[in-house]
Amino acid sequence: MGYVPTPEQALEIVKEYNKEPFHIQHAQTVGKVLGKLAETYDPGGEEYWETVGILHDVDFELYPEEHCKKAPELLRKHEVDEDIIRAVVSHGYGICSDVAPELPMEKLLFAVDELTGLIGAAALMRPTGLEGMEVKSVMKKFKDKKFAAGCSREVITRGAEMLGMDVPKLVELTLHAMQD
Image (cartoon, rainbow, N blue to C red; front, side):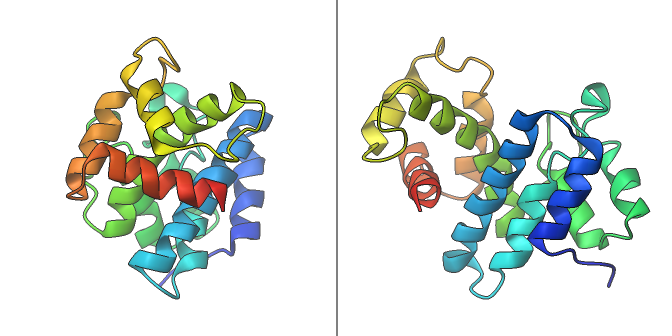
């Protein structure tokens, strides 16, 4: 088994290749959401899941055209465990990677990556942010294709299907994880 960084160490790796505050914040958000979801899906694995979430877009800022293709090279420089690298690459399945998510954590990463962006954008539109936000208001934004147009509804829907749940249930899980 290779090196399994702590979430703090993972963030330092991300910051080595990403300078844009939005990308760093997104890494932290996805990490926190995955860590929270691990409480249900893999109790005891919270820190590991958070690390994977933080690292998922490690190559995006420097290599947007080679996203998920450069990540293995960057992470191997840090001797990061191959299972983490596989999970990171699988989040781009069907978009920029042919590695299919298989484990629950990989499927959740695939699904929540885009969804955290949509929920985050919705929170920016509210004076109270995430506080008091409900699933129905997120679903209203989900159905509005013009709102946060860069967040792929297709990817979110495919992610929910991979997990055997409908989109509102995935929204509920992700929203509650973000609110925590």
